[in-house]
Length: 477
Ligand code: HEM
Image (cartoon, rainbow, N blue to C red; front, side, top):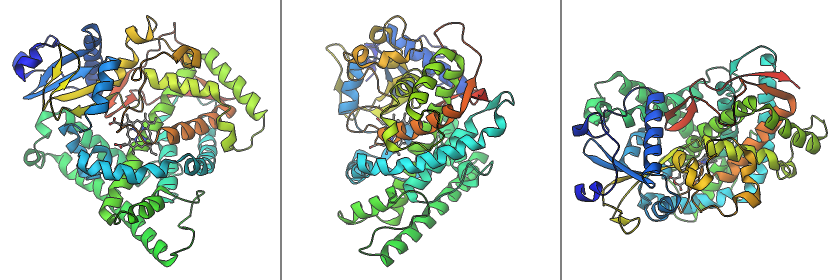
């Protein structure tokens, strides 16, 4: 392993004996800055770099072809994901391939275009609520968007995944939202802080009790919903599912129960793990992408103006709710979201494990046991792929004629290969609905950028987030 690692460039280290362990300390902004530095280093070294995190060897890749090899062949998630298992157990998103594979098969039909299109009504109603919640902020100066978009995303996924309206948008500090956010924050804290990693040692830190406390709230809540749903289905056998307290006819939970029955049926614990997968995979990812999109539009008024022009053409000034057939017409908005996800991907790094020696090219073989960090951040800003203006915000990059020759893994905000994101279409529908609803009513005002390269301070909390929690101002249009 040591000999193979020597063939790949290593960043210059402050503490060579410990590898990069002491380099990735500090707050979540400092950690992201280090990861950006490693990504740039990898790009300037031909797309691969490596370093030791204590006794573990990690490769970091920013080259599209090499990422494609990894994401197609190395399906096992890296050991660092174990910290999140306190919350999600064996949820397929972070589980071993042997558990993930059959669960993925069960989940895929739940994301069919027909089912997703039924969810648009939920997105529309929740987006309208978001727009109303923001009314007091219009003309009132700068404020943080994060709690609003975060609560919208949770309301939308709760209603579509389990059929329950938790109304996170109605109460600041909703207990479920808080418990979810805290469990995720505490789990991700362990990834970069070596002394929090051994289970036996973690128990001596106050974070351990906090994690158990918040996790229990999330578990109790989801278990109760599942219990009620099972009862509901049992009393309505043969009838159309009905736990529908929300605006969606069918939920992911209904579909999982019915789909898994064909294969022996999920236990309640397995159902809870899978439902939590959807909730965790959907909430912060979409919220952070919406926050960055609005922040960028505040910085680039001329691009925001083009979004308004498209919205005015589609909705002709009416304040009706968005219908599913409107979504396909919002092409420019879609390009804006795509370009936002290129520069600020919600999941900036996907980490896999080499289960066997993996050859990337004639010179480089990733040794069995190594961790492989596919830097989505790095490949999205790699100038050998995107050109010298790779760091510039230019939504028209995604015009079909301009992006048709890109390599398969040049643009992978939703990852790639057999283990890619299942919720890609769901996310785009939900984000387009919410953003269009807001932008029909409000103009975002931010600090204009001096040039085409946006400068937003970012931090790494498993997901990429803005340090200022997406501070902007809005005014009524
Ligand atoms: C902007 C929004 C989103 C982004 C950027 C995003 C991105 C990702 C990424 C990078 C992965 C990891 C794939 C890997 O390990 O290679 C993933 C997995 C996953 N995502 Fe998303 N996601 C988003 C929204 C959603 C939504 C809304 C849902 C569900 C409604 C969802 C469901 C999933 C699931 C189920 C997985 C696990 C797939 C598997 O392991 O088989 N995602 N997502």
